[in-house]
Image (cartoon, rainbow, N blue to C red; front, side, top):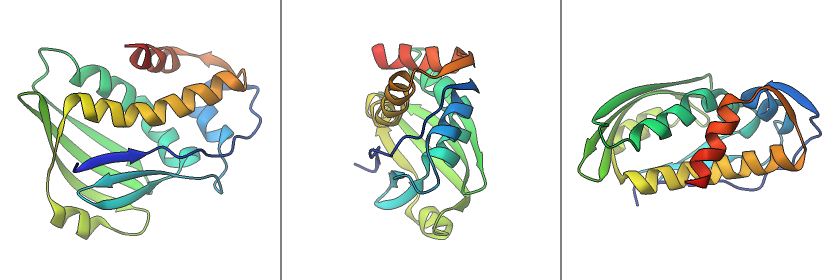
Amino acid sequence: MSFSIQAGCPAVLNCESAADMADAVGEMYSSEAEDAILVWNLVPVRLPYGYDLAALLDDLVPLLEEIQRLEFSETEVFWGSDTFSAEWRMVREGDALRIGARWHSTLGNYETLLAERGDVVVPVKEFVSEWAKVLRRIVTDIEAESVQLDDDDIFLRAKALLAA
């Protein structure tokens, strides 16, 4: 497979309440917690939970909803973290996605290698399933900690994605 994610099992810090899911993730996982690993054409890219994944959530959940719609044909997403910055252009090809990326920054400075590896082609269901591993870890931890969210929209949408 040219695209996969290893969710890991990061240690969780106490978090009683947060403004939203992204803030909760930023508070629950320290910078020393185990990272998720995104594998792009055999290149591993670290995604710290408390920083990168917290920054990606507000775009990730709507993206996963969008690409599963029958009428979906293409979209672009900008991942805007300092240590995971990229522009992905996603085009449906039958039951798969072709993802072309422009890499701006990653932990480990793998931008050139990632660009050399080219596009990723992955079945839509597998792409969603890979990201669901990370969402499941986060949702499970938020529920286990009974975190009260002032704005629970993205959290509820993430739970709905996982239930589908």
